[in-house]
Length: 469
Ligand code: FAD
Image 1: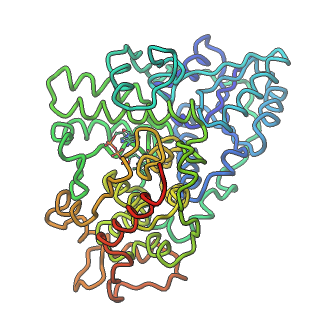
Image 2 (image 1 turned 135 degrees about the horizontal axis):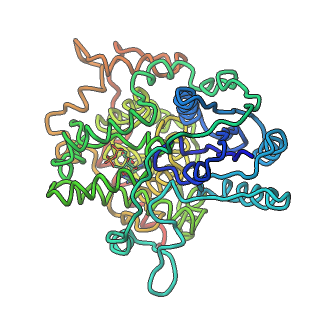
Image 3 (image 1 turned 90 degrees about the vertical axis):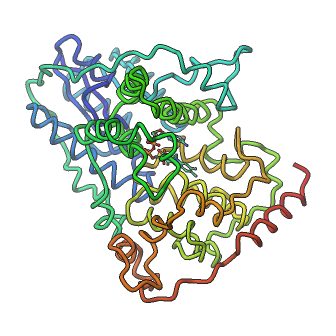
């Protein structure tokens, strides 16, 4: 009897422990994607990007003579119906670590087992399962550097190759057409623009890694901070949807370090930030929805997401060039440089004293690499309310940052059109990506600052000092 591979954030065939286990005994494999409530809950850009990934995986499977069965409905009901229909002996999947997904998966596992159906989950999304990294006293890590030290020399299994000769079942179950789900519906105008920047699928992700290793890794330690240079891997989009496995990336970076590549260590450290984010999400799920440090509940965050200042931030029209460039980059490409993410998050939470949840939600709406763990950690780290956060008095000055990390203003020039005679295509694309109702045009005057860096800093520090943190 066949076995079901429940496809989730693991849109790949290689380095896929669940698929490898399914294919192990030469049983027929039925790949199944379920559009369940967790997919329903995704905001615009991630839902659209997931849809593209699912479509691509379906095509890849078709090349191998297999099919991706797509069904919409609650996971438990859909999977048990599929087990009945196909006579499957088991269901396998790679683990997720968000609390809702854990609750769902636990219920699915229990229900399947009760019916005598094998249900097994695997660790394919991370290098280190969050419960396997413990402090000396048996707790979890709250600070990155000791976490890094604890894992950096751990052995990580080599990534498994794509299973050869996957076996088809005698008949395929009925499938819905993912196109009918209209997973891009909420993207509206943006989809047309962002589509020019997405890089979908396993083969593309592997190429991306190779190009990065060959062309950019050597300078990564310095260039990773430069939004004006293509210094980073761009793999977050593919890692987020599992189009490349972390072991694949880890082992490639280890090899580069072994060969003496000077950027490899810094890159390994970033991969461990991703692990740390999941470690935190797993051990303290509240990181995604509430102040990680409860004392921050007393902080006078402004929670009005519709204020003009916040609208200016969302639109990339604060008048602060670094902030605006970064926000526009996100509208156009669906991603934002890490330095930009830190600057805009600091500006929103500190200069504009706005609750980080407003920023977290806006990112979740617009990022094609949206990741529940990295986004939550990034926002709380920037706001100061999270573990290992920047201290409250570290208020990034976006002008100083600009001088340091975009010294020729190339990044700003690439994204801001107003006031320029011949703006580049990137800067103009912003006007095609944003909602028409915003009524913005490249011929508008560039706005004055809603809050100057100096005023913002003063405001932020005054707010912090008004409380006893
Ligand atoms: P590279 O520099 O090439 O790094 C390689 C990989 O390491 C990345 O693909 C990513 O998986 C991981 N990584 C690097 N930096 C971090 C980090 N600070 N935290 C966690 N993992 C990291 N990353 C996301 O993938 N999704 C998000 O939704 C997300 N939201 C963020 C929100 C804020 C406020 C901040 C400050 C950071 C956020 N990040 C997020 C982390 C980081 O900005 C991106 O991972 C990075 O910019 C992706 O670009 P890259 O793939 O070229 O990274």
